[in-house]
Image (tube, rainbow, N blue to C red; front, side, top):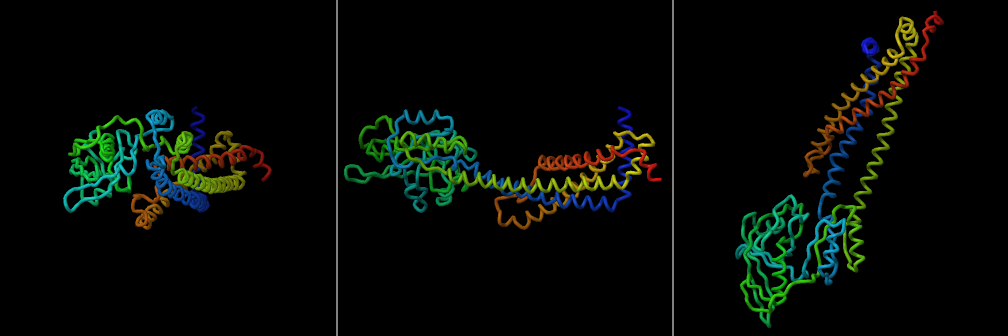
Length: 407
C-alpha cells in the first residue's frame, strides 16, 4: 500500500507539471472536450425540460386512460363485477343514459347553466385525485373549472340543481340544494360537468323516469325500484399500456369502446425516436471524445518516450508509468466537464429566458437534475479512463534501453 501511494504521489506531481508545461496544448484539449460535452448537456437538458415534461403531462393525464363506452346497452351487475376484477382496471362506476344525466345549475336568477352533464364519482376517481375531495353524500358535488367560471362559484358555495321531467302530460321541476366541495382546475377537465355521488345520479335518473324522489320536492310518480342494470359506465385503466388490453377485454363482451390508444402510441413512438436520435448523437460524441483524448495521450507519450525510458531507468515501476496518463486524462476530463457545465448553465438560462413566453406552463425549458449531471460526469470520466488505458499500455511498452539507443 505505501508503494502504491508513493507511486500515486510521484505520478501526480509529474502529470500536473507536464500539463502545466504544455499548457497551451492542454488548454486546446480542454476546449475541445468543452465543445463536445456542452452541446450534449444542452441537448439532454432540452429533452428533460421540454420533451419529458410534455410526455409526463400527457402520460399522467387520467383522461388518457379513460375507456369510453359507446352507445347505450344494458350492463348488469355481473358485467361490472367482471370488469372490476380485471388486472388492468383501476376505476369503474356505472352511468345512466346521457339524456337522464343532465341537470340545470342555479346560483341565483342571473347565474345559471342549463343541461350540465353530471358524472358519478367515488373515492379513487382518477380525475378528482389530487385536486379535491370526493363527494360522499347526495348534497356534495365537485364542479369543473368551466362551470365554476361561468357561475362565479368557489369551493364552499351552494347551488341548486334543477331537474325537469314530463309527468302525465305536465312538466315538473324538481330542485335540490347541494354544496360545492371542490372546483377542478382547467387542466383536469375541460367540459361543463358536475361530479356527484352515485346516489344523486340514480335519484336524477329515477326522477326523469317518472319515479317518486321526495328529495326533489315532488312526491308524485311510480315507486322507486332497486337498480340492477345500467346503460353505461366510467372506466379507467391502471396504466397507459393497459388501455388497449382492457379495451379489447370490453370489446369481447360485445361492447364498443373508444380510447386514446392512437394518441398514446404516437407519443410513445415519438419518445422512442427522440431517445434513439439522442443516443446516436451522444454515441458519436463519446466516440469522438475518446479518440481525441486517446490521440492526445498517445501523441504526448510518443513525444516523451525518452523521458519515460529515463524514469524507468531511475526505478519507476509500471504502476507509476500507467498512473501518469490516467491522472492527466482525469484532470483534462474534469476541467473540460467543469467548463462545459458552466457553458450549459449559461445556455440553459438563455434558453429559459428566450423561450419561456412560448412555454408558459414550464418553469424551466432546459434542465438537468443533479443525478443527471453526476451521470454525465461519470460518463466523461469513463471516457477519460478508456483513453488513458490505451495510452498506459503504450507507456508500459517503453523500454529503458531506448535512452541509450538515442545517444
